[in-house]
Length: 298
Length: 241
Image (cartoon, rainbow over all chains, first blue to last red; front, side, top):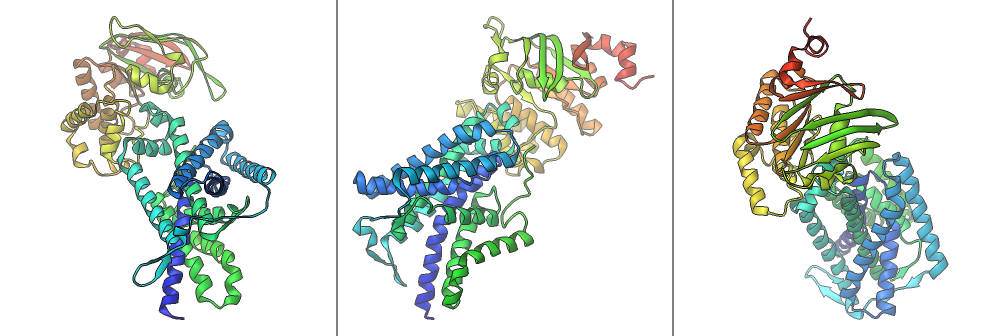
């Protein structure tokens, strides 16, 4: 096992972690503002991948334009789902919202199967994204570099937005207490919709990255990355954006290194390893690594 | 400034308010007293738009000469914009926000940034602890400090009418007195206040007028002095024999 091999595996872990992190951020944002575990979140990831395909293969848009379209499509889908499926459930017990999110997930997956078929599609990105970039210690594909940089830029932008803007402060206030936020003059429906828009936009970008990197997409591609991003959000501490990012990278790195460092016959257990890691983290730190003790909203 | 007439409110399936009528005049402190569950908090929540009345009228006139508004159909944010600010029961400082953010979120609907900062600086000058602890999470303040913070937060929207729910709750007597001093000072500056209190003796001491609530109805009203001297009130709420 050479150091170059280990280095390239670490790079793979960081790339995978970037994609998990972007999905995990949405899980955490939506949970903290509506106390909803949104199992349809992985399907937004799928929608992002198919939107990318449509942009590149059908509309022949330049890749950077496709990124913008994908974010918009994800955000819009998230807002529509919130309005139609989740807002009527507001105030219902937590499990009702959870079941509604499963229904949305099943609906979206079957809609995709009916309209675009369950057949996996190949996914071609522009040639320049497959070119190698020399980083000194190693060279990586352009698309890999783009994934990591884009994830970092988006994460930093989001953290700054939530931390320092007036709307970001209002979102945090809404997440803490609806009624008191309303007494400040905050339109909480708008804040909740914004959280869905941001979270879903990021999940869609992650789907774009996944398709661009692995070259194949299908209506069910969001299931496993969605579940793992949920694990990442829980490991990081549900409700904490930095926690979701940390959880995403830890999960991506440990999953890749688990496969890379153990003999090949263990690689089939990578998903078991991920969920095992979740159980252990929750046993030791029930609120996750960076989570605060948040009780369910009354 | 505020008129409630025969207002009925249902809350969680119970008929919480059974025809409340009261008025608050500009520049007054009006106290709403009564035992737990009488409907005092529900009354304030309906005025600020958190609850909707089933029937009755609910009108607010921000300024003499201005058109009066029917609050019953307005959203909570529109009511804040119209000039009503509500300090909820239990203070309700945002733990996820710093002290400085808590103060400024009170001005959420205002667009005049420079004036917002001036107002914040003025409130911080009055309550220096808010400037000293500006970067701390809101819930790290003591109860008395949190009370200063939520009064400041409520003033940041530049209200015409301040609704205060149990400001004395959980505070040491010395701090309660301080809070009531602040309310009297606000009245002297022209603020109108509708005050809900369990601590009836303190409330009647500063109130121009007061209403006594029982089981969703107003059973008695009068000036603060009259009610403080009423023997039934003294027995029921002031702990006198």
